[in-house]
Length: 265
Image (cartoon, helix red, strand yellow):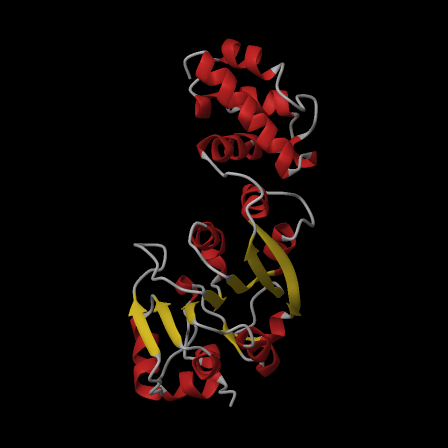
């Protein structure tokens, strides 16, 4: 049964804390859609007062929640008695993640990018995340690409599941959100050279590949003249970074690996 977080917050004398990027989900439909993915061991980041957690605990074998705010951990412990639930009071970005099958979370906007990078490096079956809509658009390949776009698309497939207006939160944030489903699908090995190339190119994403590589030469430990020599023969050298796809970036990374290694990089 859906539990509105507002009465719980009021009963415990709590409100949304901006420094924790707290906006509490108040939509039964969104909770139902997200909870339908629950199976095995579910990881929930930022359980808040347990609105989504309650539905996850009904369906999953085990739910592990990581909550940074100790006052919300106290609410969870006082209000619920799930036998298959564990809450960990710490910053999810610090330390290792527990093993999980599915991560289902309404993610605080402030940690969306670093959290997703961390999750993508873990073994998992599915990620079901409620994120800022613009963030989801980038994950599914709409709009201007970012470093996250290239990393995520090389490691997984993303699908926009459900649009979530800002009115479905308390207090309402300034932007709309969306639920995204992410499943592992590595298109190739995401090694150090690919990561460096993505970082270098996306730092100068409005430039052509040649110029972007020259301007990010410090990442590759090269001087300007040497990097100019390398970059002029790079694959897709005259293409703008924003027009590249992940396979073209992989070509550039392989070329740089070869050239920089041969030249003492």
